[in-house]
Amino acid sequence: MKRRIRFVFKEDGTVQVDAEGFVGSECIVATDKLIKSLEPELLKREFKREFYVAEKSKARASVQR
Image: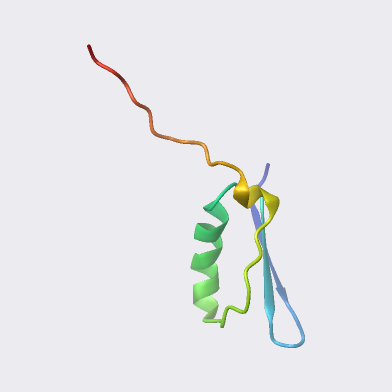
C-alpha cells in the first residue's frame, strides 16, 4: 500500500493529519517530523486500527553451535 500523509487545515485554525499506509508506530515517526515544523498545540491524537498491528521485526538472529 502506498504511504500518504494528508493535512486538512480547517477554518477554526486546527489542522487534522491523516496518515495512510503506515503500520504500528511508523505513522508517529513520519508525522511528528512534519507536525513539529508547524509548531502546533496538539489537542488530541487518535489512532487507526493499523496502529495496533504488530510491527514486523527487521532483526534476524542466528544460532551458532
